[in-house]
Image 1 (cartoon, rainbow, N blue to C red):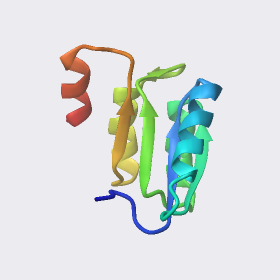
Image 2: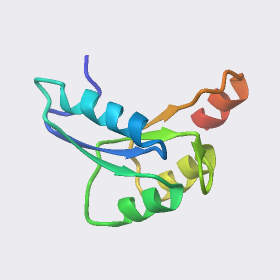
Image 3: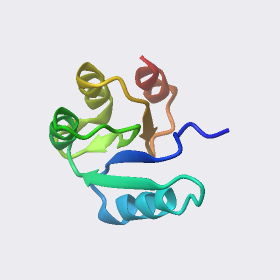
Image 4: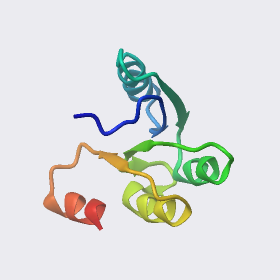
Length: 102
């Protein structure tokens, strides 16, 4: 079962260009679901992207961003748009997952 509709647009919020590119390639390679991707490298740019006229079906968000904690960004993003957020992290603590679920 897929969480994405038949055609989708995903916002990737990741400051590492290699990671962002890899995520984009993986999303665009889903054969039965055409997926467009936009990449931004800061939480502030993510909020600005959501405020634009583009409708995203999902967001892939890194927790460690240069302009702040990605978990705070999730709260800011949800204030702008109700869209599913997939959180990426190299942290292994449960506090990250609990905060991301809020």
